[in-house]
Amino acid sequence: MIYLDTSVLLAFTLMRDREPARFQATSRLFDIINKGAIKAVTSFYALHELLVIAIQGTKPDWEAGSEFARQALLTIFRTRLLYIPLPRREDKIIRARLFSALRDATDLPHAVAAHTVGCTAIVAYDEHFRAITDVLPYKTPDEVVAELEDDGPLD
Image (tube, rainbow, N blue to C red):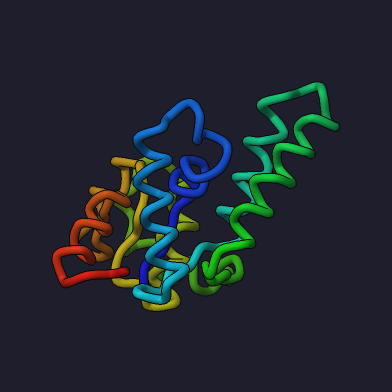
């Protein structure tokens, strides 16, 4: 099971026109997820970040921002992605030392959530996660797709 960071959700939704190569890679990844070839999770923290980015991108036009957020969330909800809750306070405290190499505090909830539910990798377009690859491997969507396609046909 893999964990999808906010950067992957962004590439698949709000950034699809700005970053077509990333959109193509994440689309292929979601095709694989939707076929059941791999299980993938994300957290409510990632969904919240997606919502905030959509709304802040149109501030002060709350109606437009809300519509962007709604469309992004609907796109995600139409997939077979699994959802996990925010990490409990105890889990954050216990695992904080494991991920002390993370320099961006906003990455910690993703790492803790992924580790808590037993993910084998965190999938992102965020190089900060390379700092914890000894605890939780970091991969890009392109790397995951390539690995799965190397294992055999997915169609």
